[in-house]
Length: 138
Image (cartoon, rainbow, N blue to C red; front, side):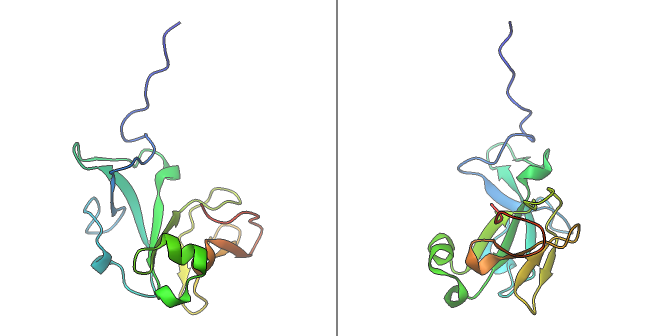
């Protein structure tokens, strides 16, 4: 029996050394730097890119990432320890029904999934703060 083949490079999961690039818009495929993230949001949707080959790992929606820049003083201790100058990253896939978490509610400071109204607090490790989701964002 033949060994299973490796996934196509764009289907592969993000790996150490990858850089994050814009998923959409006029900068799609371009690397994201801290200055590209406005403090307080909105979030930026990103894909991982293997820098040597330039392959963007956009073959699975499970690879999409949310980047958000927040006030470092507003982050809980665990989240602050994982953040870089207030920049946090979460999976863009809702833990309820795997819809895209595509909305930022600036006034409430929460990420919102419009499919079933799940809401997540990026200042507290992606903790569920509303809706049917039971698990925080990865």
